[in-house]
Image 1 (cartoon, one colour):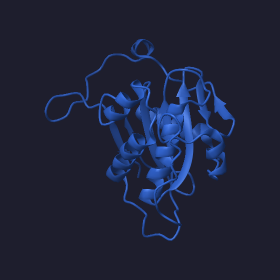
Image 2: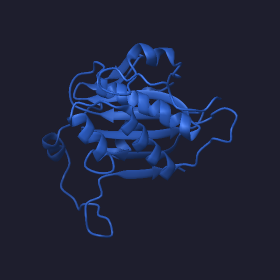
Image 3: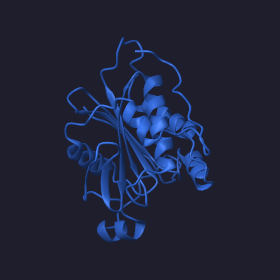
Image 4: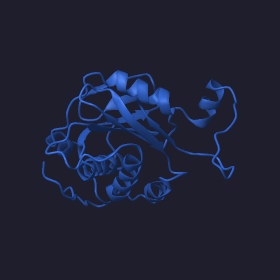
Length: 207
């Protein structure tokens, strides 16, 4: 496996991958995308603008995962997207930071054996956007720098979930706004850090 920075398609907005480029990248197909999506949704319960990155073994068993949003460690991404700048550089740095927290790198292997997938929860429709392109660029580059195989990019929208480039998806689970989430979930105690502030991200390591 050759390591190095992924080629840059700066376009008009930043480092992104378009659907045709993603299709040419040879991204491996998920054998059971519904199970992967349902498992990550159950573990992280993402709201819009939340990213969930997960590492799978060759049998598609979950090894580790992390979620983050624009109000926490992903705030630089959120500011950039809000300003209309879809740039995979921010996405790559955030993904790489969280991968390093939850699982050791595989850079010493001659070829990757573990696969990283990304589930991104957002508003809007299922069609590709430049924001998706930035996450795709970031995922591919982060995988290269962490010695992982680049896997599927999955969007979770109000219409349901969709594996970009594969034409596979479903109506449930789906992205829910704060009002619908509150109606669905009974109130409970907030998870807090040692300083007493709310913790906006979740890290998990499957065993």
